[in-house]
Image (tube, rainbow, N blue to C red; front, top):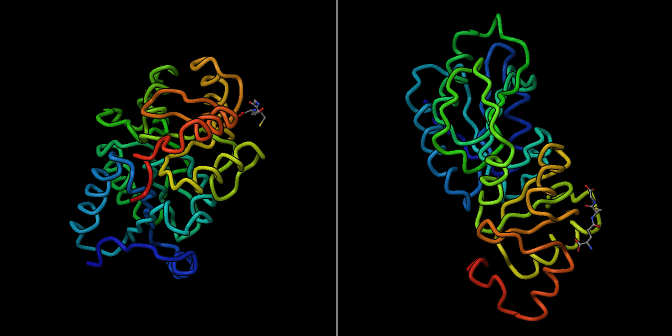
Length: 249
Ligand SMILES: N[C@@H](CCC(=O)N[C@@H](CS)C(=O)NCC(=O)O)C(=O)O
């Protein structure tokens, strides 16, 4: 069995999905090297792929840090880990957001029972898109776990050592302030996780109250709010070594 295919380019991805027959499925694992929960889920994903004895599901691994932003944007991946399941390479069947091995296993099992003919209608899991949602035990897809928004935000701000809540994605910022902050972090070589608040209005509005900060972008360091663009600029001006321990070696 081929196991997991590491996607290296957008073209490679498009060729694979284009050539996937209507009766087969594709499982996409969006992950990043900086996110601890992805490490565990990458292993689970690999195990689910290699333990198969058939080729009914193709397992693709997509590192969001590589030049693959177009793929993340296609599937509105706002944070990771995030899994997307396709039928025939184009129809989105379901999403699993967050680091819940049970939920990932259940989603794959559901593809197996669908058997390529009676696929259930399009659905999105209610699990929050939290990179740190380790140990969540929603399991049943019908069991809608409505996590308290503050609990969710508390996890989200810690999803990576440096977390940027922005409008759009680093590859395609949707506001000048977010664009400037992305450019600044890139210039300084800071590694960061991001959350596109335009993809989730609950987070967009909730985080303003949670952190008592009315605008975006918002930058968090080890779960603590640093501030918006102006404050981050000031921090770098006052201390050129600001966040130096968070930079790429
Ligand atoms: N000077 C601010 C500018 C940020 C700003 O004004 N952002 C606005 C427009 S993008 C905003 O987020 N408004 C609230 C919203 O859109 O929810 C900073 O330093 O970050």
